[in-house]
Length: 384
Image 1 (cartoon, helix red, strand yellow):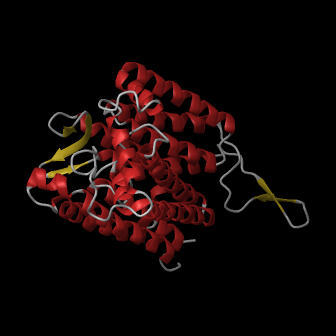
Image 2 (cartoon, helix red, strand yellow):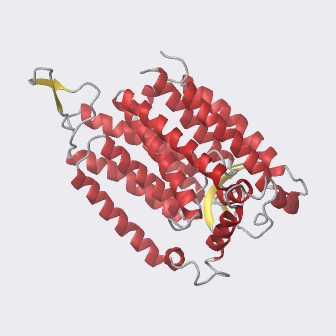
Image 3 (tube, one colour):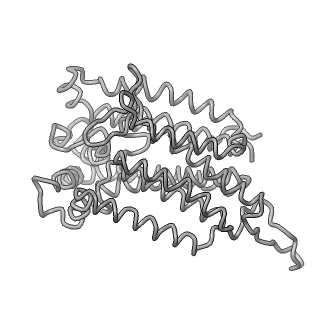
């Protein structure tokens, strides 16, 4: 076993500390208004996010990741139970329009965040089991002389049987349905994109991926028809100037904050938009506050750090065994999609989805599971 991946841990450490500084600045006006304590949200993040997150990092970095592949359907059942808990009367809790939280006494957490890592483990286990049972056709390698050398070492496969596709769909679509009912369309998009990326990494046929894509598009189209506000949000993305005081208010204020920052920003702690102008300043809008206070150069540097994190996860995936490759690739896809969706929504590249920025936005559940995922990556790196 190798030592810890110092580069990975260093990248995450810098993002992690920067996120705490950004949260401490962005949360002050809201914390004073609600709790008369300027550092309430920062202290809450330290107590319920940082401490258990660091513990989760060390636990998952020491726990052999390969044991998660043994019972994928058990993990699948846990994922579905977690997502269904929000609909249990007296257990599920609503904040705003979403019923995405579970409240057990003083403890409140978001099951969909914990389900992300288990979802990746489950999908990787199903895909690897399919190969072991002959559901995948593995690609032959060539010897230096050009003759066939049998199966390429460490290859997941270049094709996949219909049974594997059905099994993956039987797990994926109930998961997406439960997320859509919360409603958490942003989370459903992350799960779907992660599953497709892992299927592609496992050697899934492009025709099968196209089937998933068409089915997913039809699924989201039906949901948009059922809930008109989703269609209105998409139209706002196309024309944010049409209703600047209504449904387009959020994106317009985010663009105003980012534009106000200029190249060097207005200074840490001096954001104007965080004073009740920009919605969700400690959640999905925190990147806009960072850009306003610290400017384009620092915001771009944060993006570079995120890209370095994803690149490191991909490097770990390429050096791992079959199961580790899919897990590390799934984590890279999860981080990549979520980061792109959050930052892209703030600069008008994609519609607003309410997705938080990993390691930076406020939320104990998100921080704990993100640090646990980094622990899994270091574990895979040490065992390859």
